[in-house]
Image (cartoon, rainbow, N blue to C red; front, side, top):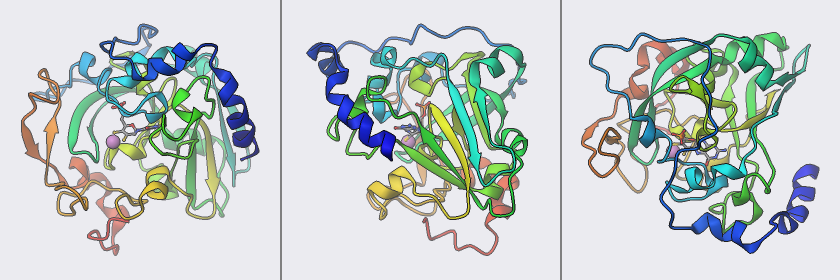
Length: 308
Ligand SMILES: Nc1nc2c(c(=O)[nH]1)N[C@H]1C(S)=C(S)[C@@H](COP(=O)(O)O)O[C@H]1N2
Ligand SMILES: [Mo]
């Protein structure tokens, strides 16, 4: 919080020129972030019949409000974010807190590739090949203690690199940094993933470089980008979209076609394929986004009609 206060003071000085600010709203066509490079991965076998979202769509149709609130803004403004070098703290209720040099990990490991569905709460979806490591693997390294009941995640706070953080109007009314959270058993579920790559290359800035969460059975806003802190905590942590509109976005945010958003149905979704969002056909949304076999047991005894 102290850092945030200091950062906000500095934010007005952060832009060398007015053009830097205006660029957020430029009408230029989104371009691919050109700063990715190939990764060393164990490639996933492409399941038969599964259509991946084209890379060009996945990297130009984004939600990353810190880089602008229109879908094409994050790609246009990707150049602000400097993902290298990058340090990620794993801390809190653990025996062995540590700082991870993310590029050291990327350069020295063979990352695992996973093909996951992504379902945005706005009722569009993608199928994406991520590369990374399981979240559980990283958390275990820190040796959580018995008070560790939840995991709190935080995105970088730096209005020079993420200009949407410089003011409420630029950043869509969100109080930054963007924060997210999981229950510890959700975090330790084998599906929870820390992605450092997409399509076999390092993450483009607009997709959350250099490291972001991917929780495929929850609405996309849980999959927080450009993470600098993973903190094991005792109490349920605040989460960005729940803070912004608790009547519309819950902590759990599990994909559930039977529970509508107050302003729209969640029964179906537009899959973003070759045609982008405009050509997209509606398809039914699946319970837990199709991952019920893996995660339904986490919510036994909970009323799934309550979305919070
Ligand atoms: N820090 C941060 N993380 C974020 C967001 C954001 O605005 N800021 N948007 C979320 C939302 S709503 C979605 S749908 C996914 C989109 O990920 P993608 O752009 O890689 O498809 O990122 C999530 N992570
Ligand atoms: Mo989303």
